[in-house]
Image (cartoon, rainbow, N blue to C red; front, side, top):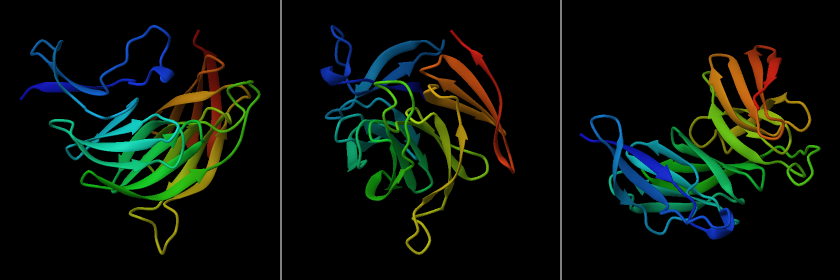
Length: 237
């Protein structure tokens, strides 16, 4: 069986640098026996700005990074569209699937959409989690900008908020919530220095690394029963 890699690309010129060529959306690229990219096996049709992808249970889930954001479920073998659902916000840039829930980070709106996802079927929208905030960098931090979400080993969700200089931690309720409760409930936040602009995270055990897009630094936090403790930071430019 051939190994493949999935690539998402911008399709709308308004989201691209001047002079660049629009991408194909989602593409399947084969990897040969030597581990090299060999050929494009297929591509999506009618999917706009799939800037981030997640794979689960034979399906590919893609954000559509647009002013009226959406997520799309595609069949993994031929990238045909199975279903589509609004994220309830603008410019979703990150998606993950956890059990029967899909979570999408709406960058411009600063919210996290929780959407039911079962066998490639999306909907309904269960919750728009929000923790408004801002930072000192003009033009980038006037409001919250959810950029990435990550599930921890202790059943919580971390959300990097580039606009508010925080990593927010949410408790996750399995399924669709108990007795109508929201699936996500804010627990605590790891506060970063003003102007950090946290973009992406890496978590290993209880050690969290956060890269700052605006300050060009890598920040290290440790998690314990008392919450998040800042350990150190180092410039990476």
